[in-house]
Image (cartoon, rainbow, N blue to C red; front, side):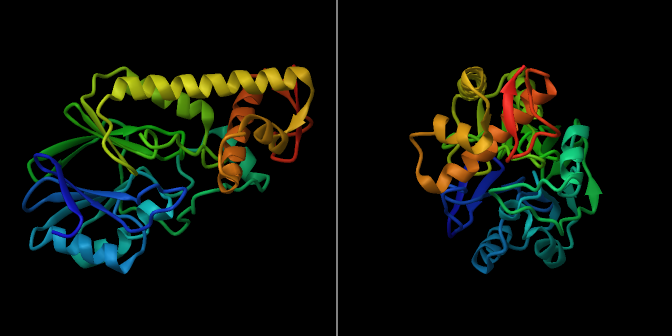
Length: 293
């Protein structure tokens, strides 16, 4: 039916038509469980065609809950319209600012805003989920896992050895970590959290299923640690601004992706500053000049 794809028993994917440099082939919406009580995970962007595709895939079944991994518009915008259409409650960790560390709260208070993906500032779930909470979905049981990093309130969900990883772990790209919404220290801790369990498959918020989760987690961890080392080496040579470091380190990406890469560099700088490995005058900001301690 349409672009509906069965990925496992009780798990279907309906992909939104919002392909872009930031979303890959589009946002993946998952229907979990069969018959009455099924859950919709990440209803996706506010596209009428995607809304109708979801309604068709759901059919006459009763929706038990609408789960949202995080409050970016490409994942959460359809949550409220779908809730109104089905009568199902919206469940998430919190609103778009939930889960921020004290450092990120301070940066936000000083006017730093996120970059890259659109933040859904109107998002407001009906009920809150916390790490370890279980949700019954049409014969399937999901366990919520708090995996902050891409956003402070980002949730992943486990069904046995399968994990729905949202935007925290994807196969086609690394994740955008853009302060104050994104937090590199939290992102690395969440990679470690996921690495502590044995998984057979990851189902991400964008792109195709990941068939070798342990290898992908190791590769992402290595990539971020390598980038951190490169930043420290560059700052050892001379102080620099975020944009200067991004231009130095990201020489093999399309120009359209450089702003997102710059935000990733800023996330590393904020984390290194919190570890007291680098310094700057005042709080770490995009225009600040950073130097090695």
